[in-house]
Length: 263
Length: 301
Image 1 (cartoon, each protein chain N blue to C red):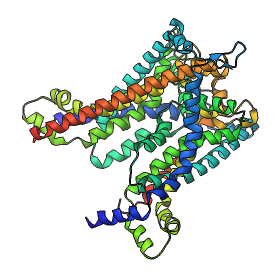
Image 2 (spheres, one colour):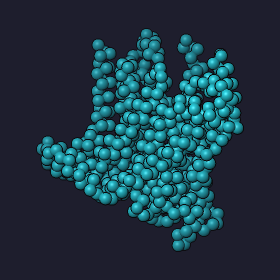
Image 3 (cartoon, rainbow over the protein chains, first blue to last red):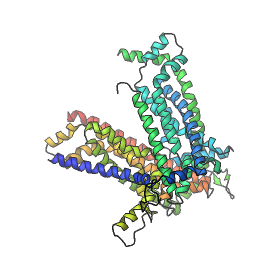
Image 4 (cartoon, rainbow over the protein chains, first blue to last red):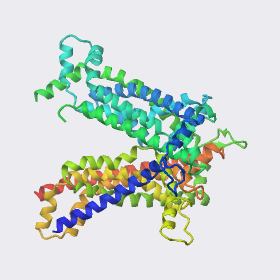
């Protein structure tokens, strides 16, 4: 009796929390299909705001920039992060220093890293643009790729490495033909995660992209639009951005889980 | 045992020297684009702003003295207050949610946890914007109130301190749920049964047994929300509407409009210092709590 009451209270708490988490986003998604475009009145289902968005050159250019930054920075971070993860795991002397260094971008406030990089690039007279955003994004992407790959390495069967060595393979061949294929799902998952993070990242991009309009990324564009207020176009853009993150995340989750036999 | 020996031998096959080659590129990248820039602003914080912007390279502590100026100290306190409030509310809600998830049937828990954290992966700006849609003067909440027949003057909801706290709680709640869930899921149900057998009521069991064991998780969540909130400039700018400043906005201004980089650097260093103190204190507290528990365990058994 008491336990059933307890269960009801728990279900109530869960429903309230989930409503709090999901209602605001759902309202946004719903409004993006509202013909009238205004939040106070539903005037029928329509895709016309989606059409309007795809005709907006500024947004398309920003989306293109974001894709470039996301792909290149995730690519670099995936290579460096994977090597880093393997390097840390096979090291016999475990240094806390290296781990702290890799973990640091996760705890340093974004704004501090952003202004530090801005000062750094300006003092070196580096021209700001998409390339500086990429350099900056690799810093925090590395941490995430490394974490995902290391998690996978924890359950890695190192005896196949020895088997490979016994059969006469060099370290490089072993790495390329044995270790990397076994880690592939985690590497791809980590890369996708890095891509998602980079695509959504605003603060560091805002400070390191420079003043030119040509190097505006999608989150910077969204920020500029939001400051003007509520418009149907932002609702559509927001919906697409949410959908995009969810798809990439689901893909990354699926890959990493599907690759773990026996789990 | 055999497995361990094989593992040992494999690690010898690929030696430390080789691991250094693997680690070097990432290490170089982090040094160039994180360590050096951070050291640079640490140094900048001790220089002086030139008369026409720019930087004069003579060592001074006046940037740090300026942080203590009542004008800026007030912004610091205000930020700490808002971050503290957001962290407290997020901790309470997050703990309740994690507790509820942990009391559901075991096979349902992973999915529930996944969906609790899912919003965290959507864009921060978009999640903040969602609240502008709800709270603004012609927004949904006002619309619903009107539809329900409320005709009086609606209070201003957007561009208030409350809106900023709400936005921070909304954005960081999944984080606390995740942190609080870990110790709750490891909790042995026999412990609370034992407590009940010894005559403790439901509330006493929760307060004296469950809460102390599971508090470190939610404390971690609290510290992270506080740290993420106190340096935040997006939420105050969008939901506070420039009505008041937080440290993040102040740093932003020094670099993008006031052009006082040394002062902006000093503010960032204070921010980092606050963060380091809190994280260290929390790690220390967690370690003490876990050693305390270990020494208590034989007595329980």
